[in-house]
Image 1 (cartoon, rainbow, N blue to C red):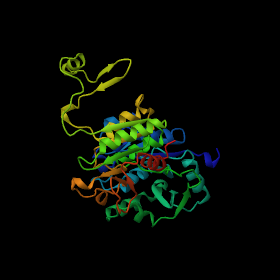
Image 2: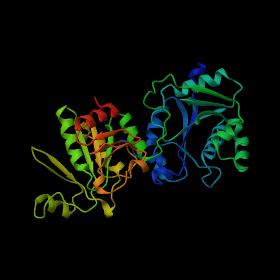
Image 3: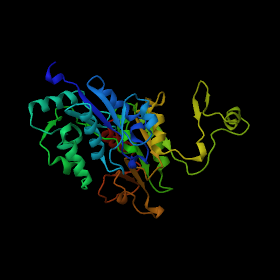
Image 4: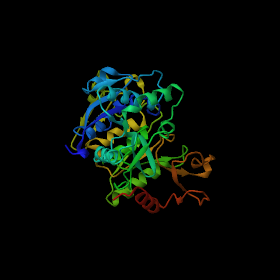
Length: 377
């Protein structure tokens, strides 16, 4: 067997707490109805063996994937270095000299990742570590590790080392630069660390169009502007989806109607359809409101994914691009001064601001800016 075809064992690191995902098990969070970890498994299947999963909770769910489970050898959620230590120990126990580690939240790993790392290992026989690199950044969790370093790593952790870069700085390291891949719009080593990253991933996968919100105080004219933008986009052949947040309880069907009675009887969900339109009504269990990011999942699924852009009204505190709507007579301050997500402001007066300022009544100019910013075809 040729050296560049050698099979290397692999451990997928899924033992973190997922704090920025609301404490949810990141590896098991769905991206288009598939857990994140399944995308990584797909990339290594047939290219690495054996495969193990480093996890510290939800063991039964992870066992369903059919791979060996590795717990952290040192307790206390001490960081990724402990997961790497588990990987080195496991690979050494099965008499392997090298092991590949990968994070569970990188669904866009390049297809030639493993062969490129193995090639660099073979070309640099004296190294302890081979690390992926892109856009000037090192990714030491995406790396080939020499298993003989397990005791050195264990001692470093016990002495208080937590940052992976501090430990790897002591190792002989080779780097593989993946900038030859077309990464003009995204880095294939991007980690999905937040709900916003999940939106970006869906857009990369072509399942979700660009999204922006209309931010403004009550009475500023957000709904009026939204209506005019939809009309203008529609005229030029751009399909728009909208998501509006309501601060109060609402019903979209009337008491006495069949759809109302079915929903009240417990239908979850209730769908009503006619030749003109259809509607889906879903009760929120325990009155727990869905987040913006959960609601956007609707647009990532057929048949709602036919729009070219989504306008969000409300959700002003969410981490998405926003266009501010401002009227001075309301007597409120600017929002963009405290929200870096706001990329432009539309007002009925000329403003001196650090971001682009647009005439609220010039819908064509606002439309043109949005088409250019979001590269809408």
